[in-house]
Image 1: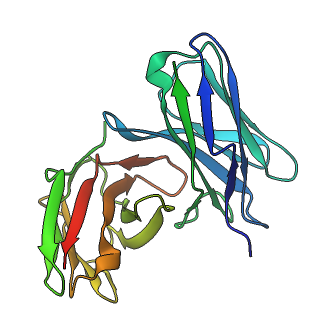
Image 2 (image 1 turned 30 degrees about the vertical axis):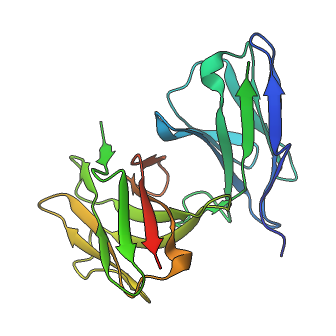
Length: 113
Length: 114
């Protein structure tokens, strides 16, 4: 069974632009969570989607948004990029919401210049 | 607010030796879940071990075991017979319940010395 895939793997954007990252969960998994990983702040929860509905949201500004499609694939969008948005963005899927184990993707490395 | 603290940013251990990674957390809940995740260099993060707070018995997964001290709010990870493949960033994590978000510590980078 294929693992969690994230596209693109690397991205360079300019301050003020917007970006969309994609996550395809493991087949059959319906819950997708997003995390931001930076050296300074560590791993921080962004949001979780289950059955196309946002179930949980972390403490991030409204510039960060996401959605989930009927096939469970998820996208996250960051508008008006800031230098501080440079990070590794990780996606994780689980069979259902509330499951112990989340399976992480390789991440998208976003660099904002 | 719940917090997770890993006081050791970096540690080293000789191959085949035992190492313990520390983690403390702060919560007012009585039931919750604790996890250790491993993130190898340039590889995907995986769950190493989990502990339910209502269980008194410490969780064990092969060479990985935890020392869960609920009263002290401490959750350390012991790796026995360290192997080169254990080199990674280890994250301690807390989850109030399975419907809630996961809160991660800042991580401990573990080096294995051959």
